[in-house]
Each structure stands twice: as C-alpha cells, then as structure tokens.
Image 1 (cartoon, one colour):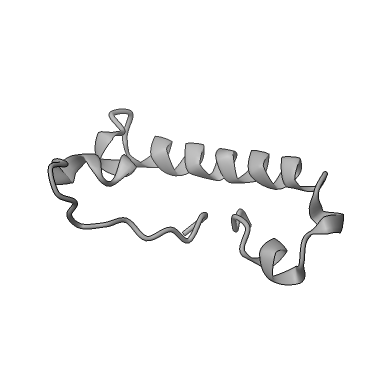
Image 2 (cartoon, rainbow, N blue to C red; image 1 turned 90 degrees about the vertical axis):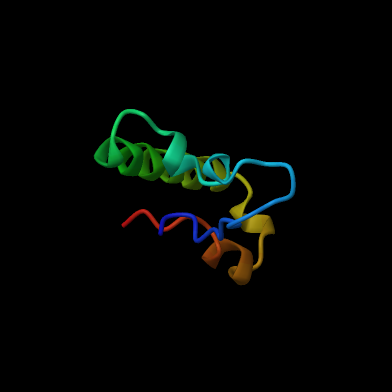
Length: 66
C-alpha cells in the first residue's frame, strides 16, 4: 500500500463506510489507486525539501510509489 496506513473498522458515532476513503471514492477502484499513487509522488517530491533534516527511519516511512 502506498501510504502503509491502517484504517479503523469502527469508531463510535461514525458510520463505518466513512472510515475508509476507498469506500467513498465514486470514480472506481483503478481511479482511486491512480490518485493515491499520484498523491504519494507529490508528497515525496515535496518532502525532498526537508529530507536533509530527516532521519533515515522517517524517510523510509514515506509513501511507496514504485
């Protein structure tokens, strides 16, 4: 997974279908995957500005887009 995020299965007073952004995406699964990858690439490009100040662990925790 690009961002390696965990999504909760439940949360008090929140409908479960709102917890996973994939469920709210109406343009289809392929479109969702493409946009997630695009966001990961943009994040990594922007993070390059700060990478000299980050530890290897922080850098390694970034989005995986390859």
